[in-house]
Length: 210
Length: 210
Image 1 (cartoon, chains in turn red, orange):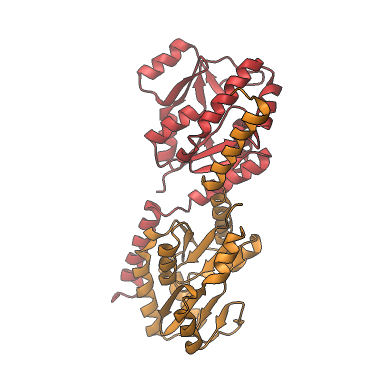
Image 2 (cartoon, chains in turn brown, yellow):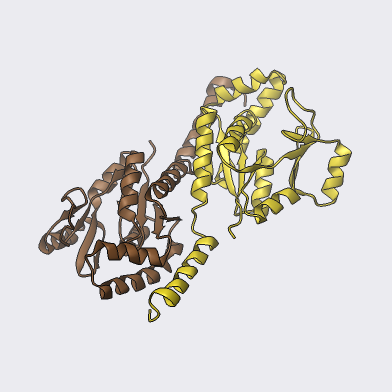
């Protein structure tokens, strides 16, 4: 039985993780993990689909119970990845996608070093600023803060396996699909097991003397 | 300037490397390196396309001149990968495909550890025997020798990055294409350089104070 892959997509706010991951999920049969957060829903966001939107009290109860794979406080709000659904799916052979901020991704890397970690970059800083500005939910000062933070985070990119520059979301999603397909063919326990069956086959059925 | 990737495809004789690589070259713009050999052409093989077929004297002259990336003697014949065309193409940013036997692949791994090494497995030993037998060029004893050697070689699979099981050549070629596309997005010097340009952009154009 081949175990599933934990596929972690991260990157600065505004790089387009959400859109890219949406397209990626449509192209593959990967299962998107839904995060929990204490921040308010943005227009169009649906509880249980984009996030589980919960109160701070409820969030901290899950923290105490050890129920998160990772959690972090980012800009006054908590974000966390519930652990149980992820480990259950992986054990059943399903690949699981986490779309999380960079602080969360690095925490998961420590917990789960064999995961596949992909960083999404914007095509330029100017474009990143344009994307954040067009959301219209933040002040200019808040945007400057984010851009500065994003640049600092990029210095941790050596902690990631792959980096996709998101010029067009559909092309970036194609790259994620290729990475997933490639990683499924990595030399590992499943291949060693296959070779053991070949030796057995050779010994028993084809040529008993070899 | 992004350097090209050295993409090495290997596996036991009869696993179908040649067919798979033929399809793979059609799907991508990778450049196939043509090997040199002292063995006689098989029916349908073309000099300068499948191999450069040369005399033993000529081959050994190239060896003395240090002109091979790797060379090996396999079943009484020499096989080698001419070095110059490979290094020239990689430096110019082109990806280069080597389709070579397992002994050669491991020699290249030592010389060029940053290459991408893919092992092609047959779907079963029974199928491997069928494929070798249907070539009709070898005695049953020679086939048994090859199968035994193939099994021994498979123990070296931990030296490879990826393993593709060749059930259908077109699907195996799709897997190689995904691996190449994925490896082009690996975090490495090109990405570090991109991030340096983002910092510069931020400093000069967007927000001089950050």
